[in-house]
Image (cartoon, rainbow, N blue to C red):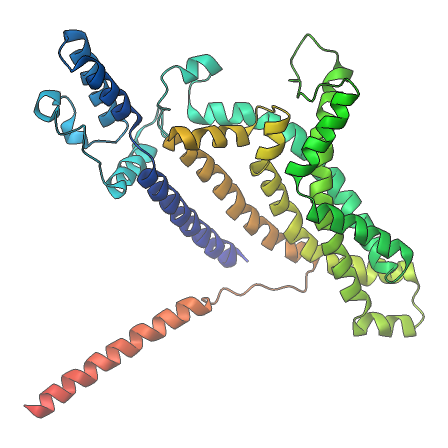
Length: 387
């Protein structure tokens, strides 16, 4: 088991590295230097003639070096590169090298700083992780209750639908599930907002520490976004659980158990629950991470200052350091959650054993290397015989 966990951790680190590299290179390629735009506007308006303008251009040049839009070797050499830097674009690969170096060597700000100097002071934070976790709690407020309610209710309705297959109960639950699968959250949300406005209720998320409102008012303001998330994720749990239950109920071992006289309750706890718990475990935790990181529609409609809003605002502004921390955090959370789910299988079903043998891709790769070596040896022998 320990070897298997270490192997999975190794693959998780490799996956994290690949995703981080791809996201950084794409973001760096398609975003522009924000300080360059300011410098271009400044030069166009003042023709770079005044001493004040020259000082501002020098400051923008130094910022471009500090934020790795220009080579570090250019630092403090504005006079040598004052014309060249306005049209220069540093390779995204080199920028990634700078970013990776800062991640391991910069103890104060390992994930860098935002381009906007005033952002930290406005938000009352000191670093990008501090800013992220400050707003993460608001995302958690609406996603955790929604996840718990939708998971419990969805699994219950899925089990009920599976047991009542072919009846009006099954049909009703299926119609409900299909309706909300087909109807996305960005359609449901405006409908609910219209209903709330007609009832003189403002669709606004109230912060938990806002002293102007009572506890009841604060909790009431959270109910609409939580309800939308529940309706959006409930259908998936229902459909998945129903399919798993039907698959178990129609299996040979359950049919044999029924022929031996086992009751419905005994079959459920001994066979059905045990067999559906493993695929459900693989679904539940990753689905919550999806809710936590993908609630941009709900957070936008209800003005929830959550992490999705940070991500949505970072891309247009080219805030690559904020984007990279979000990517790093959610990818790290996702890959290690997958390991946790895999390990939990052995507790849910002790019959499951893990193998530490290399994967098929590694075996194919090794075989290819061996074949290439054999081919080279044959070529050398053939050349020797010709001589």
